[in-house]
Amino acid sequence: MSDPMRVRATESGGVVDVKILMKHDMETGQRKDASGKAIPAWFISTVTAKVGAKDVFVGEFGPAVSKDPFLNFKYKGAKGDKVTVTWVDNKGGKRTDEATVS
Amino acid sequence: MRQHWTRGALFVSSLFVLQACTTPEPPKKAAAPAPAPQAAASTAPAGAPTAEIEKYRAMIADGNPSDLYEMAGEELWKKAMGPKNATLEKCDLGLGPGVVKGVYAVLPKYFKDTNKVQDLESRIVTCMERLQGFDAKEIIAGNFGQGKRKDVEAVVAYVVANSKGSTINVSVKHPKEKEMYELGKKSFFYQAGPMDFSCASCHADPGKRIRLQDLPDLTQQKGAALGWGAWPAYRVSSGTFWTMQYRLNDCYRQQRFPEPIYISDDTIAVSMYMAVMANGGKMAAPGLKR
Image 1 (cartoon, rainbow over the protein chains, first blue to last red):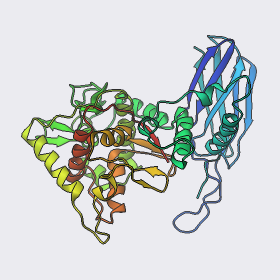
Image 2: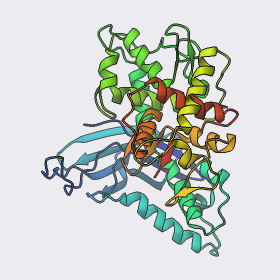
Image 3: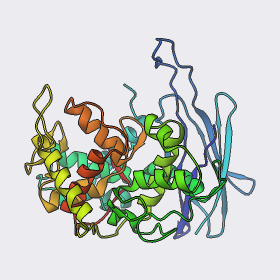
Image 4: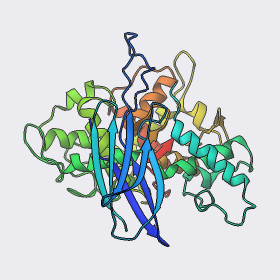
């Protein structure tokens, strides 16, 4: 499972506003299925946003974060920057998407 | 019950910001009123619990996960699939083959080729059957959020998102459309089941609410435009995108009626009634619901 993210990035006054919507079930490990067995935890553990080689955002996520997480952050940058966002989940799943700052 | 921590946390922190409005720099994000349809029609006084809910809705509207379904739907629309290995790009949803922009605002409508009044979902199923060769019966027998019906839902998100802002303009000129509207009206007011309920029990009074959710009065243009215009929507409590068929299925369940058959005439008729009542309103879907 690795559906695309939606990454939007807009610049205003030297500050880039990045909005990321990730598609992930974010299973906590606390829920049980119809037969009473625990559904194993499966969640995004790290999110990294890079511009070129530089990290502009690094976050550690856990099972308390909602399904289909939405993330909004700002950094000092310019129009035309390429923001590359990568998430890694606790099962080693991975997804990378990119957006150009407008 | 899973709590949606990030959204909840955002809400709490933004409230803090609102209370601290005397600081020289007012917060940009919390101050900007999002175009939430609920907020527009609210008569609730400031500070009322429902007003707080509206603030919360406006705040989370920015990260509506419907976007994710919309993206998947766009891909499905353009991808050659099925036994006939065709795309849906030639699908006539009501404004001509391949036209997606604004089409949700004229549905349900009468289609000559099937000789039926169809809503968006039944029309997409028709296209999947005729253009791509999928088995419609299998989709009808399936479940929401599973198998091929999941694809229908994603395509719905894509089409609906492209109708955002369009004026609802559903016709009742054709005799079949008129007939469907009348059937829908009858169905809407049909009181039955173990709880002696009808759609009208909840949705025919202005100012009614259930817990903190305002119930739109679907028998009036204003309420119908709000209700019809905000669906399909992403439902935060279940973490899934709900189409109108899904929402109606749940209405029938809440009334303790037998489960309606997917895209059956009665579900389309009730949609038809709501859509016609909403004529003149603006589409605001995909919405974001509790």
